[in-house]
Length: 582
Image (cartoon, rainbow, N blue to C red; front, side, top):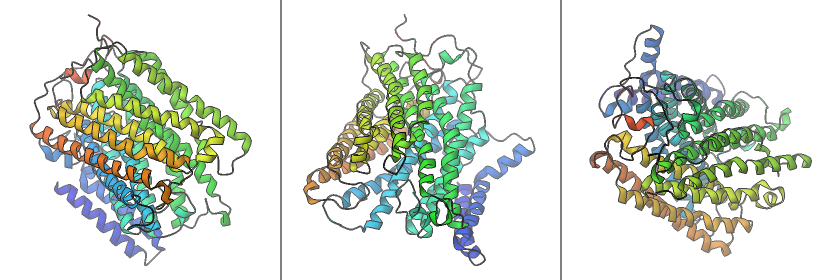
């Protein structure tokens, strides 16, 4: 804990003080960039990365983990500790981004401006957006993925433990930068940070861009580690056809994390360079073009949707066989569909910019390709429904959230058809219909699946059962609140009301008020979740090693698992979903 406090203090002093001092000798924003890099490296060194690096350089063994809760506040190489660290930071960001959403919905509860100016509203909206994107990117991939994937494939740890620790510990500086950006005037561009707005204005925008770049590198490092771990460290006898479906989903997401995230990182670095170094990548006056940024951004950001959704698919398909007491229906079809989604995800980015002046002829192939991606997605749905069909359903909390995922993500998928087709997309572009679709896809998909996976693996992480009654209250309150927020926005958006605005015509006051009420219901549900986690981790019923009677490898070890997962190397001789075989 002392190291963490020193690291945060060192980061703050070097970034703020160094930026002020360097601004005397160079342009302000160039000084801020240099100071941030110095503060960032100091943070990593002080938090424990420096000694770990020296241990590696001298061939010394680095302590894998230490007992007690303090291990979660220090630099650890244990993938289980890192998974919990990811979960903690993700939930912290969820709380902050959720509060931003409540501020926005309070402003929108009535027509007219209430207590935010237009610029202030846009800054709050931007911070909410990027915060929730960070949660969607890290909660399953970083949290549940880090904790569960090595154990499910029979490995003792991730392939690169130090890189794994690094991928987590570069996130706290990014979170601190986002908070500093809000304090320094905020970012009024929306979370996509389009130039020319992103290349003009106060230093808060620069801090936002630096935070975004930092999160990108965390994602790349995590993708490299996931790919290597799943591909090379599977247990003896675990062929690709015997691999848990969650590992398949993480493998598929890892491909996108490595290939696509580098593109958005490059585009953000180019934007920082335009601001701090005087380049003109996106400045028309200097020969650049802002449209280039849109292409680079969406070449990453549409595949990035599947960095969020593919692991969500994996979680749901992992939960359904356990609580249906049936083998996973269409295992090979599901795994193949994941790979098909990966390929197609790189071919559809331009449907986001149908209205940006692209050549009309290109709209047709991009429309067709966007429609095609519904084929492997639909196959995954068929696998989910086939698994439940005629099963002995046990409607425990993980199953409840998995079914909720199916219902809500289906709405997101069906409404996406309208945005894939050129004529309707032109009408609906940049309206609240897009906001509602996106939230049904990401929240109705990733966040619902995250809660399913969280309640599923909570006994393994803590050794205790989560409170079932509270988990059910969390589900029903959250579902009700979520639907109250976004179902009305489909109607409002179809009438042409734009998103990213702090005001709207008075005739839409009714649906907007319902959406605001729904936001507070969802906020109440999230408080129930946090209380359940706190209370259950302290005094929940002992879980035992395998409370769900599951068949994957993580349920063959104690809860919580030992330091290196397995006393001896496990051997796999059968499918992980052999339910009802006897």
